[in-house]
Image (cartoon, rainbow, N blue to C red):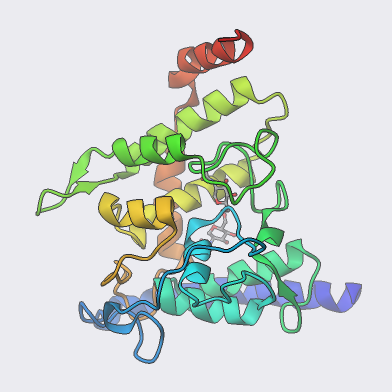
Length: 288
Ligand SMILES: *[C@@H]1O[C@H](CO)[C@@H](O)[C@H](O)[C@H]1NC(C)=O
Ligand SMILES: *[C@@H]1O[C@H](CO)[C@@H](O)[C@H](O)[C@H]1NC(C)=O
C-alpha cells in the first residue's frame, strides 16, 4: 500500500487546487441557484423538507462536529453513525450544505488518510473522527478539551450559549448575525482560557486554521444566522425549511472559503484575554 498510496495522495493533492480554482471561476460566470432550490432535487432536504429528526439512541456513534451529527440525526447519514463510507460522506456533505465538490472530496480523503483507511473501500464511525490532534483539537467553540471531556460528542452548553449570545450583527429583518469579528473574538478567548486551564493544552498552527475553518463554516454555509445556528449547534438538528446560504452552482470552493478562514484567523487576539484566562485558572484551583 505504502508506495502506491503516497503516489495517489501526491496526484490528489496536486490536482485538487487547479480544480478548485476552475470551480471558483465557473461560479463567477454561472447563475446562482434560485432561493428554495439550493438543495438538489432528489436529495433529502429538497424544498426545505428534511427527513425526520430523531436524537441519537444509546450506542449510536456521534462526533465533535455538529453538522455531521445533524446529518445522522436526520438519517441522511446512517442514524447509527456507523459504517459510513468516505465516498458517501463526500456526496452527502455536498448536497446537504453546498460545499464545493473539491472541498467535499478533500475532507473525506483527509479523514481516510488520518485513520489509515482506504477512501474507496473502507468505512468509519463518526466517533473515529475525534482522534485527538487529527482533526479534533483543543480550544473548541462547542466542546471542552479532550483532557477534560474525553467524549467529544458531548456538547458544552455554556460555550455554545456564549457563542450564540456574542453576535453583534443584524440582517435586514433584524435577526442576530454572527460576524467575522465575533468569531475572531471568541476564538481568542477560547484559546487563551484553554491554554491557562488545561495542563495538556496543545494547538498547532494547522489546528488553529482548522478552528478558523469551523468558524468560517458558521459564517458562510449558515450565513452567521443565530436562529439557524441555535438549532444546528445546540440541537444538531437542521431547521425545517433550511437550505445552504451558499447559492453558487459549484458550491463553496476552498479558494473562497480560505478567504474567510484567513480573515477570521488574522483577527484572533489571544493577548486581549490574558486577564480573563488568569482569572479562570485561579478559580479552577480554588475550591468553591
Ligand atoms: C472544529 O471542528 C472539529 C471537528 O468537529 C472540532 O474537533 C474542533 O474542536 C473544532 N474547533 C473549534 C475551534 O471549534
Ligand atoms: C486552503 O487552505 C487549505 C488548508 O490550509 C490548504 O490545504 C489549501 O491548499 C488551500 N486552498 C486554496 C485553494 O487556497
